Image (cartoon, rainbow, N blue to C red; front, side, top):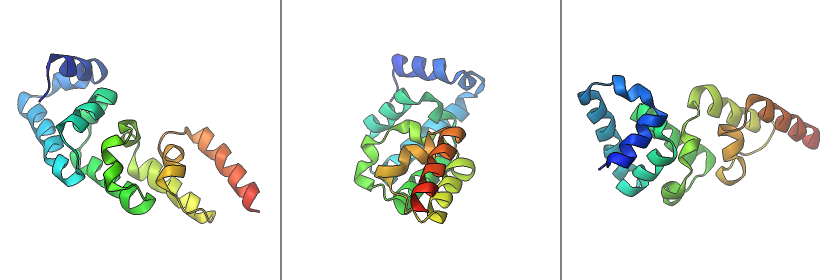
Length: 141
C-alpha cells in the first residue's frame, strides 16, 4: 500500500513512528484501511491524506472516525465530499478545540456549517478564533 516515498515522508514528519514496533505500525495501517469502506474513501484518498498530513498515522483511528462523524452530523459535511477533504482538518482535537468552538458558535445563534466554519473550528489559533467571535458578537448585538 505504501511505497518508499510515502513511508519516507511519513517518517520525516512523524519520526515517533520509528519507536513503534512493527506490529503497532501494521495495526495503525490496518486501522486506516478498515476505515476506508466506512468513510466511502479508497486507498488513494488515504494515501493523499497521509502525504498531506503524515501525523495522521499517529492518531487513533477511532478518534479520526469520531471527528469525521462529527463533521458529517454536526457541521453538514457531505459524505461524498470526504475524499476531497483537507486532511489537516483532522489534526485538531475534537474534545478540546472542535466541539467547544462549535458550541460557542451555537451559543451566539450561529448554525455551524462545514462550508462556512470548517477552518474556524479546526485551524484558527485561539487568538484568531476569539477575534472572529468578538466580531460575530458585535454583528449580532
